[in-house]
Amino acid sequence: MPRYGVINERRNQLHEVIRLSGMNLIIDDIDHPLIIKVASIQQARMQVYFIDNEDYFKRKFMFRDQNDVFFEDNDERAVFFSKGVMETVKKLGWAPDVIHCHGWFSSLVPLFVRTVYKDSPIIRESKIIFSLYDDGFTEHLREGYEEKVKMNGLGKEDFGHYLKGDYVSLMKGAIERSDALIIGSPEINAEVLEFAKASGKPMLDYLDSEDYYNTYNEFYDQIIESN
Image 1 (tube, rainbow, N blue to C red):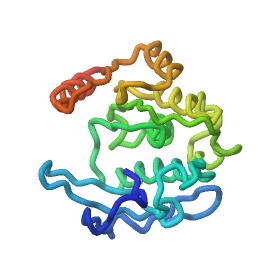
Image 2 (tube, rainbow, N blue to C red):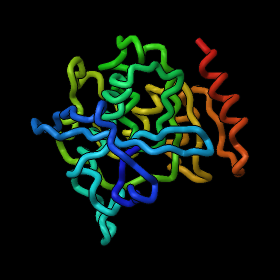
Image 3 (cartoon, rainbow, N blue to C red):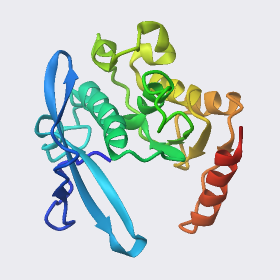
């Protein structure tokens, strides 16, 4: 996940993973250092890896400033995060059964998985599940953002819906390239929901309960076992 500035590193005992850090990601012809940090959730015996960068994630807000203004560089931040996740998974060297993406900020991951990384031995068998939330925005990503998205082997013809750079288009692009969907909020964008239903992808409806673990696990198993 992104190491947003609202995350208290000392309280949550984050520390840098030196063996994973040190890469640079090129965004708009500029090298940006990729810093990987990790923290543990002891009760769940789980490690959480954080994608960090001073330029993109130091600020004490997620997507909007104190005046509720959408950050102008949210396009670069989303691109950096998605590229950083993919490169980190490669460097870790383990093959995920499921790549579960949450919300618009991770919406470029399915694009990368289905294009740039489609022949990677640790990614090509992975199933993509995309969760839809009430996280919409009315702004457009900056004109020309697709140039920042491009990686080796990725051309404009691969973008499809993503090319428009607005919220609905990003979500449609992610839905199109995912294997299954989860409704993560009681209310989501109506156009996005209609597109999700029309896609015919396996979809888990919103669960109004904290006891969703078994349902999610069963859904994971169903998607993993599907052809």
